[in-house]
Image 1 (spheres, helix red, strand yellow):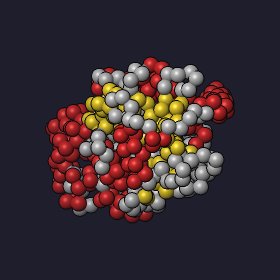
Image 2 (tube, helix red, strand yellow; image 1 turned 90 degrees about the vertical axis):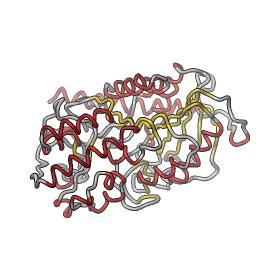
Image 3 (cartoon, one colour; image 1 turned 180 degrees about the vertical axis):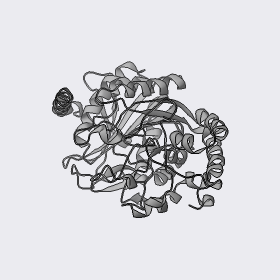
Image 4 (tube, one colour; image 1 turned 180 degrees about the horizontal axis):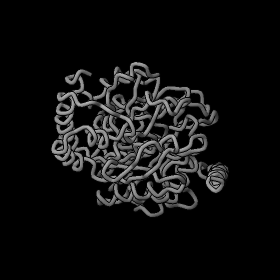
Amino acid sequence: MKDANKRKKFSYLCRRMKYLLSILCGLVLFTSCSKDDGEEPQQHAKRTVIAYMAAENTLSGYSQLDINEMIAGVKSISKYDNMIVFVDRANTNEKPFIIRLQNNDKQPADTIKKYEQDFYSSDPEKMKEVLQWVMTNYPADDYGLILWGHGDGWVIMKDSVATNRAFGVDNGENKMSNQGLWMNIPSMRVALKALPHSFKFIFTDCCNMQNIEVAYELKDVTDYFIASPASIPDTGAPYDKIIPDLFNYNDVQMYQKTCDDYFNVLETEDGHLPMAVIQSSQMPQLAQATKTILESIYNTDTAIDMDKLIYYWTYDANHPDNTKERIMYDMNDFLLRHAQTADYQQWLKAYNQAVVYKKRSDHWQWHESRSYTQYADFEVTEERYGGVSMFVPLERYKETIFKYNELIPKLAWYHAVGWSELGW
């Protein structure tokens, strides 16, 4: 135990030192000129990857660290490809801006657009505006999107800019605070669907985003959805390694190497980071297979038992042992326990066609204020682990902080698998 505490303290000191160094580096990186809207569109590239960095919140201090890692990563990509980063962080002296990262020691971060006014990066209309501008000015054969920021998966409160949960909280006051507005996933889908191009991949450097509900919502705007079902380390992805991965034009190598490099990130001392990749074209078949197996389970009055199932998050942060607030259960583990063997094996074929890659960890969710032990009351095995969470409506959610049974109908997955037809 003492050795573990020493490791955690050492890790924390290392992160603080990296953070201070990132501030010093930032003074050099952003002295470049602004090209802004008058610039002619660049030469057509093979791939443009856009990092949407929603950092006007408690993650602001980590933004420069990750930009520095991205700069290291672009040294391994073609000079004809584009690595573009939109940045909105908690700095009263700074408006949102867009930079292009290049293998150029004198000017590695070229500011290509500065916004005159601050705005909510969690506003889906602003996200659409930013991404469309990049696609117009940095055209390519295909595009990738990195979602950088806080994430709470599918949970939403209302349409448009949500008042709670989902992605990219922005406090609107340039403070390091998470008391602000979020973007919910259906609103994100509408914004991304309106763009002139879809994405080869969406890689989410956010907590708890590999839900089947999120992946299904975004299935028409990306070929691959790469994310973790669990909470990620505060320092985020190792971009010096992952940026070259994302510019690999062999799809399988691209997503496998991305997951492998994030899985092996050293910040999660008590376990690796669970990861999974969903191939969007297979989502309709998986939805139909899930609808069929759920009908078999619920129409035979199978007793639903969630005890000791794999789960990835609880929203009752003050009482992490409160089982009523556990909502993100492993999809495969739930169906393995409750379905008949033949039904499960049939469903598993569709699942394996959709979830094309996954990395299993025995533990997750460790950072400064929480121990992974709150996620140690279940066993993770190769057979049980699926890498993707799914919401299961339960009577106990009538007593929870958020009324999850009332929120889930806002997601397309709820209707695709027929939860309402099963009495929910």
